[in-house]
Length: 504
Image (cartoon, rainbow, N blue to C red; front, side, top):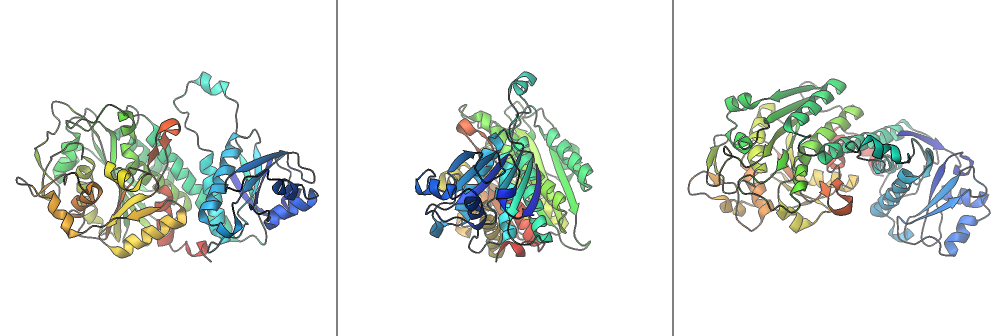
């Protein structure tokens, strides 16, 4: 999708569809008021008549509104003016994005970013608009038959103008580019998540990383089983024992910062299909375990986003990837494995495999002498029970890092919620036969999983994002969400010193 920013009156824009905002009490933002004036108060009349619901995100489509050069005008409710905030703004953008994705129009003008929002700059509003509208156009039809695609009429816009008041500035163009880059990264993460396990294998993830590295000129190294054996990654390799697919350990090195600047390390869990292993999962909804590599997908998507933004940072991406399958060679409950750190682990449940591959990746991360490390994983069902599917779970060994991530989550709308990482929980991981068990019992499952990982992350500042509830949705709209690419991207934009323009 091609984005541009323009100033002026939207009433003069010749376009397939013009998107305007209006408050529930009938108050019109400046650009909407200009269109209302040229249409002899038609918009005000419709609002007084109650044609637009007061809930933010509801819409009213008008055809060939007098006084405009638009074929269609989409009026979007901004909710109540005294309650207008980040959520109402995003709801309005999401509704517009949905309508734009379904319209036969090929171009659009959107005049929503100019609506004043407490504590949010115009640059922030433009970034959000670009990301949400571009993300709304996402479709996954790569596996549909040619006939199925041919039978469907092409819908959705190709060119979009973001209309604002005032003067154009370079930082506004940069904000739009940031939003586009985030949406592109989300699309890659969604594509990888939505692919089935017979296509999106560990080898496919490695090939994707290599292609990204070639396209954006950053270093990519793929370690094979023999390499991991030499490194002593016994915990990671224990998970791979039951699969015919070869495991891969992907190392991406984006060098956009100063040569001696410490890198930020992102670690993504890449279980391309999780059967549970010998501790087999129930059959119902097991197909959704293709999404168990969404942590890896989010790291790949974030790397694409930061490369497109050309962020002046050093970032390392580590992706341990394998299937978790039952088989004659599979790890059994009760087996004891030795991690790369030398710590031994009693595998009490083979379905708690994500932490077994992540722990070796966290040990490997030490060699980069990182500024901080963030791992991202669809790790525990307990996180979904605790937090639902709205925020990702956050645990960290450094409060300042946790606060920074929480702040960037709020700014991006891709929020997280912090859970405690207290020493008292560590006792739940005791084992009679090894240094630790890989599960801590039925209570506090998300916390004990993070406690396990924390034992391998003592050499640096570390945070863990549990995205089991946020990486995909089920039901009729089943599909990957692309989260937490926006959160990670916003975090890195902040680390690059480019987020100052987002707040007033």
